[in-house]
Amino acid sequence: MDTPDTPSTARIIDHWLGGSHHHPVDVAAAGALEAAYPPGPAVFRDLRRFIGRAVGRLHALGIRDYLVFGAGIPTCGNVHEHAPDSRVLYLDIDAENIALGREVVAGVPGVEYAFGDLTDLSTVTLPDWNGSPVGVAVFGLPVFFDDDTLRRALADLHAAVPAGSHLAFDFDSRLLTDHPQVLAMMGEPFHMREPAEFAALLGPWTLTADGIRPAAAWGLADGESPGAVPTNFYGGLASA
Image (cartoon, rainbow, N blue to C red; front, top):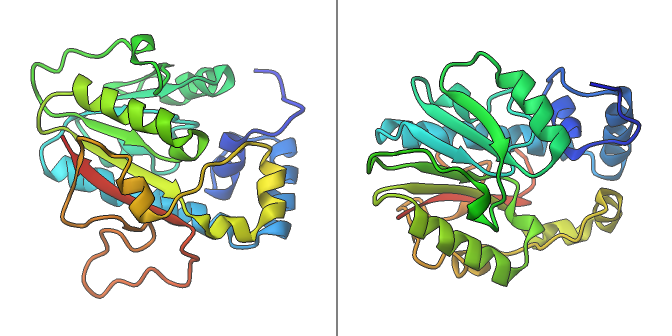
């Protein structure tokens, strides 16, 4: 692939996670973001650890098929690394992410990367699950959708997956409004929510007993501490 001249959010995150799939333009952009919001790298590392705990919980429940929407770059502790002996379909609408993602997972048994739009499931060729529960992940994605769009998309997902499936999610809280410079630098219209607001959008999905908690604290073992990471992001699981 040609060296890009504009940064990518997915590649910036890869840089913060210690990956190798980024370019100088992404490192420069990451530095500017860190100057505006120093906790950024630590927050994203905690979000990736949350993904590991959430997927580990689903794997322990016996789920062996996963759909990951808005997948970005599937490295550094992404879903397939926490779900051994499983089938994982990474999905995105960004052509660069798809091309790079296919390179990353090439040759990994059971793992594929394809185009797929959370808001239009007709764009996704759903695997044959034979009625087995599925794990659906929407990590880092809800912030890009308004309430009506997200509510409809989650309801469509619920209708499409077998009974017993689970939804793993995280979302941005309004604490990020305290950092307008960062939001301006990201260049996207973000839809931030508090836990009760997000829960109201889940529709037919039922939250697990853990509920919605700060992502850095969700699913920690007794005695584990989330550290001093800002509570900017929340996460949880919900069942179909």
